[in-house]
Image (tube, rainbow, N blue to C red; front, side):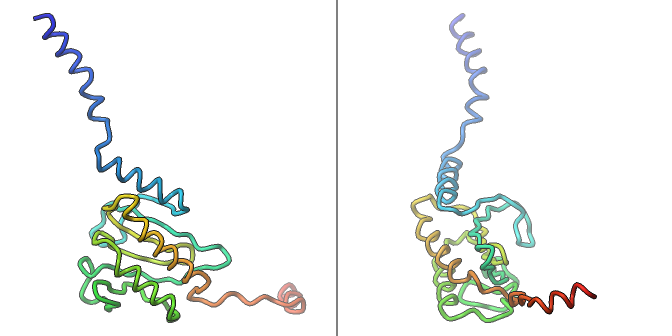
Length: 180
């Protein structure tokens, strides 16, 4: 009887520690996030850009400061409104880039989107980063191909902002502005 009470007390002491152990899914996501972070991708959990809200993981490939990217948002057709303009099978524009993307960048975008996992919901680009919003369904090894595609896409989009770069002023123009 004493041994039963001791076992019960020890079980009660250890049970909260068992709840704190990460699940196999949490371990897989931790390995995935560590692998992409080591490859230079910024991982962040944030509010979903979708209307239904909720938290979602965003993986960001940063554009170099001197080579900003274009602004656009593509949404997977399964979660998009029918009012949005179709881009390619399975994807719709929420925001189109102001200037057309060059052929190589457009082909790379189509390739990357066509191969993304089903839980990839939104791909957006801003001046600062190319961002993938998704449910992190893959492991680190399985995501490597997608990471390479998106890194290549980021390189093709870098330096193609929607607005032209500001014009550098000459010495005379700077003096004229200073006098005003």
